[in-house]
Image (cartoon, rainbow, N blue to C red; front, side, top):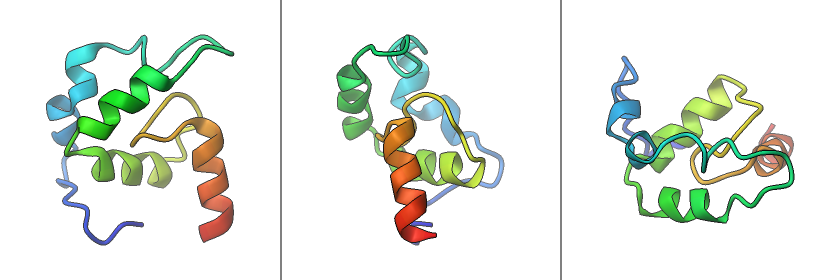
Length: 81
C-alpha cells in the first residue's frame, strides 16, 4: 500500500472526495465507455491515494478508484503482489 496515505479509520474521506460531488456515472461507466473524465476528476482529488488504497484493500473489481481502472488495478496487484 501507499505509505503516504492519510486514510481515516472510518472512511469519512469518501464523502469529501471529488467523486462524491460528481456522481457515479463517470466512475462506473457502461462496459466499453471511456473513463477519461473519471481519471481527470481523480487527478484533481487530494484523496486519491486513500481511495486507491481502499480499492486495493477491499478488492474493488468495478469502476475507477484512485484514478485507476479495473484493469490498471489488477495489473498493479500483479506487479506488487
